[in-house]
Image (cartoon, rainbow, N blue to C red):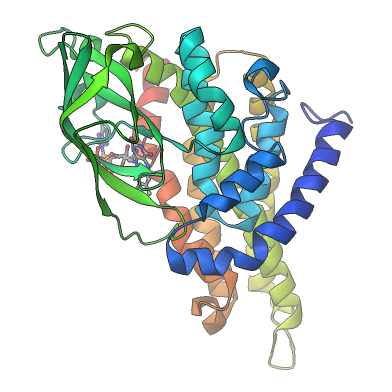
Amino acid sequence: MKHPYLNEDHEIFRQSLRKFLEKEAYPFYEQWEEDRMIPRSFWTKMGEQGFLCPDIAEKYGGSEVDWGFAVVINEELERVGSGLVGIGLHNDIVVPYITSYGTEEQKQRWLPKCVTGEIITAIAMTEPGTGSDLANIKTTAKLDGDHYIVNGQKTFITNGIQSDLIVVAVKTDLQALPKHKGVSLLVIERDAPGFSRGRKLNKVGLHSQDTAELIFEDCRVPQENLLGDEGNGFLYLMEKLQQERLLVAIGAQTASEVMLKMTLDYVKSREAFGKPVGQFQNTQFKIVEMTTDIEMGRVFLDQLIAEHIEGKNVVTKVSMAKWKLTDIAKKIAAECMQLHGGYGYMEEYEIARRFRDIPVSSIYAGTNEIMKTIIAKNLGL
Ligand SMILES: Cc1cc2nc3c(=O)[nH]c(=O)nc-3n(C[C@H](O)[C@H](O)[C@H](O)COP(=O)(O)OP(=O)(O)OC[C@H]3O[C@@H](n4cnc5c(N)ncnc54)[C@H](O)[C@@H]3O)c2cc1C
């Protein structure tokens, strides 16, 4: 049967990416986890091989390929470890703001370096006082001549330490009603006066992913760094959050598949009471339940990705995939750890890291509770 969006070209691409990751990522990944950082050299190596932003136009350095290639990249990175999530965020969440809403001048200035990895990007919406309630952000940007003066603080920002270019959600109109009409997006660059990084945050998991606070104190940003139109920021965020949530669903599904595979191997080889633990009925039932959840999740997800690539409105289904597949992945992480016995709790076994990494998937990109409020609203409730 024909795959809903992948063909032979994607498969060839997957093999070459996998080979690249076997040489450049797998052997170093544990070290990156300890360092709490992925080296910049890995980003530029990804760029040299065409693994950063391959979907963008050739005139900006991209390969103009379909989004199926992005799916392959995100799946293969997740197979190495969830700590590489910042690369998918760069490719498929932040850079698309520039390609969709940037001026020609902005695109020429930034996109080629996003493709080579010389520019690492981030998106800063969340603040210490607000995450889910985005219309209530407090970071302000006031026009002063031909510059915006930005004041405020952001937190939990992926790629926060390494980023060179950050798409920042700011309030340009404090009086706007409804409040979300006062939100705009500004591109703030590494050397903007008044911009500094706060703490690199100490997280439960995703250790190799740097996550940080950002501080803006009378930060001067040229007016030409406004992305799109003033007051449209919230709308842009809502449009792009669909792809962001789909990425989280893809990551969760891939993690579930990886965890099941390693557990299946383990229960076949580990023996208790004179036989492999996979011979106990409880183990078999758990494995069967997980396999069923994974198979059904994959079918739903692949169909959804195909619809997203076709440009269909998939808001409700994306919200469903995001909450359900991340919930399943969390359950699978716990079951797989249990089936590993004591070794599952040891850092030498990958399931321990997977167990730490997965819970955030139901929190970021909009919590699973927020996903359910979206679905309920779209059901007319
Ligand atoms: C590792 C990590 C990386 C992140 N990366 C980024 C990033 O790159 N950029 C960025 O901008 N943000 C990022 N975030 C922030 C993330 O998107 C927010 O943490 C998330 O949206 C939740 O916001 P909050 O933490 O303020 O929780 P809150 O909004 O305070 O929510 C607390 C609880 O209340 C629930 N809740 C809130 N509102 C409702 C409601 N209406 N109905 C029902 N329940 C509700 C939530 O579901 C949650 O359970 C990251 C977070 C983490 C942990």
